[in-house]
Length: 64
Image 1 (cartoon, one colour):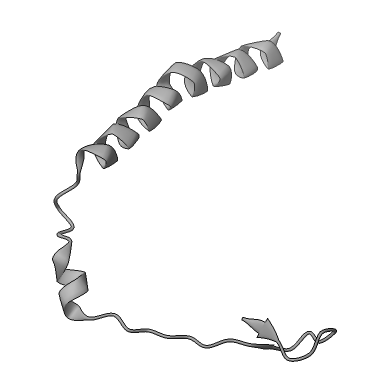
Image 2 (image 1 turned 90 degrees about the vertical axis):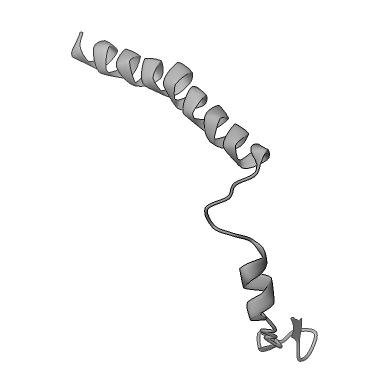
């Protein structure tokens, strides 16, 4: 994506969509790799160990 001139706000952009059905079928949706499961587990632990206690603290400190 480049402007037409140096001080121009008009941009030329080529959109190339060259997706094939073979690329889409290459990765099954139901099968996740170990890294994806690890990231979901880390997110869950982050929410439970940090998010919930901070939320409880905010609620209790605002009630007092």
